[in-house]
Amino acid sequence: MTGEEIIEKVKAGLPDAIQDTALPQGDAVIFVAPDCLQKVAAFLKDDPSLNFDYLSDVTGVDYLLEEREPRFEAVYLLYSIDHSHSIRIRVGIEEENPSVPTVSELWKGALYPEQELFDMFGFHIEGHPKMERLIMPKDWVGHPLRKDYPLTTEAVTFSYNRDFKSELVKSKPPTR
Image (cartoon, rainbow, N blue to C red; front, side, top):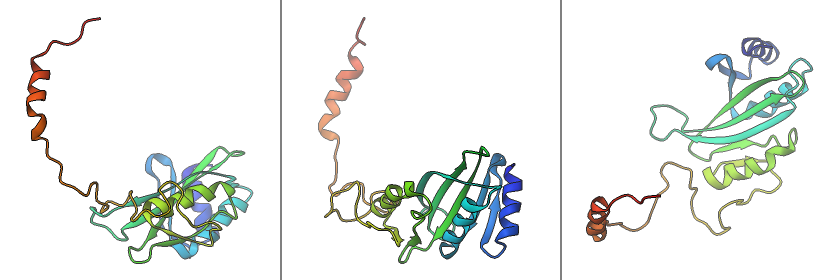
């Protein structure tokens, strides 16, 4: 199935659940609201002609510096092993109380990536069986992949190594 055929099939099956579609380089992309994610995901997995049986990735996006709403997005990449086609589901998430429902009941492979969405972006994953930090320490404050997360908490000055840098410029490269 081509990307266009996949999109038409999904739009015909769930006309009220799809907010928008796109076909960048022929790849199927659908945009859905968080409250429609589970319904759309189940349709994509259960429809025999689509059969998206493999969740290859779940990731988040922070559009803080972009002129767009909503600020956040959760992105799900699905693949059909039998049919060799793929689709991306993009779920817009509001800045205030960002949350999205789990798809781990459909694909167990979503468990860790959804925990990572919570840990790195602060997205609450509704219905997730273990909503806790995965990468950062349990007592960590903040979410490091948000664009407003501070990179450091102290001022860094580089004037102390100015002489060292000029010595490097004067030296010859090592010979082999």
